[in-house]
Picture 1: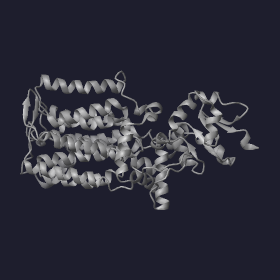
Picture 2: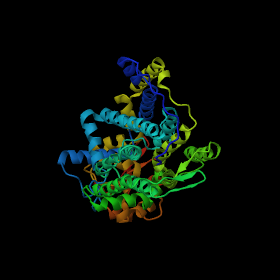
Picture 3: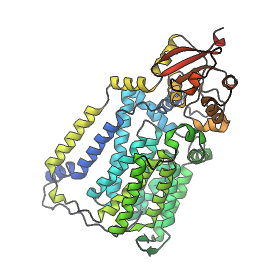
Length: 501
């Protein structure tokens, strides 16, 4: 992102103001009030998203790491053999740590704090980059619009928070001291153990470094070369960041797995909506096009500049967000500061002398009350679990001491990994291993009734099928080989007849 930003200077407070007055003005300023409102918005948005299907698997693996003090390298909880790339072990340990300290309420409290940090951090990024607290507010709302697709108790939230931190570091290193760039290698050492999005982070650094070599002006597109010393420091930081990312249990395989997850996961495309390409006819697809249109209009009507590094990062964001709906989160993070910077050229500057302490204080108080009131109760959390997972079916299996391998649906697998670790599960969210083993095609054919159920289920010794009532397979299992032993709360449990003989 660019080094030159043409915006009106922020008017500073007179030096004659007393120290208590300055402290009060800073504590109840417009940026703080906006940050508080964004934190409340994060809590309100997150309160009903406790039971993400993937959450349970991460929680169980975190418990395994906590109990054994080892990082799993072998695929467990499934009849499918193979090695596993523990690319998110640090985030999984943190998720279980929140559970260990406060149960499910502790988990959702940590989740709300992370979501609030993402929105507040995104606002800080837009302020730092655009140099306008007012113009940063629309940018923060844009970030919320696209980030809300990924608000869940999953490692990706930590990864995208680190992406925001990376962009702040890059900008500070560009406009202030290049030593800021030296904070990147430690960040990537942590990031590579939290989430596979570290690969996107490395691409962002490479894009900024690439753009720093050019010097031209073509219409509204501007490229500004960096000083050699600043470029050299960033080059060193990028090299050490790539090496720091290797400080993980899997080494180079971490890179390969992250790349495979980004480009080569047909089972995800077939089963999980968030991995599918963005539908431009959807609401978020329309917002996606509207944001790109707004940036184009600012270039034409306001005669704003677009810098080469911004264009490269925007192209990366469009490719990611358009190819996978789940990457709209990244699109929002990369596009929001660019929009804020362009809006800052025409926005009225924030005048500290006109800071309205009382309205800001009332907004902060209202945001605090809203966040506390919106925080879900244990009863609300339990109702979410029962509504979105096969909790009752699991209780039935446990009360009747049923044991054996279980075939289940993708969205049920994670909960079974958590609630019934002694039962091999087929399948759950660890799609990389299933993809490499050739299982996805069999799973898809089975679910769609395109092959012989019994032969496929025999291959992995499946003794139970836990399916949703709407599953085609729930209505096609042979009655002489399978019988329904439980039905309720939208799920059906089938047991092999011969397993009881």
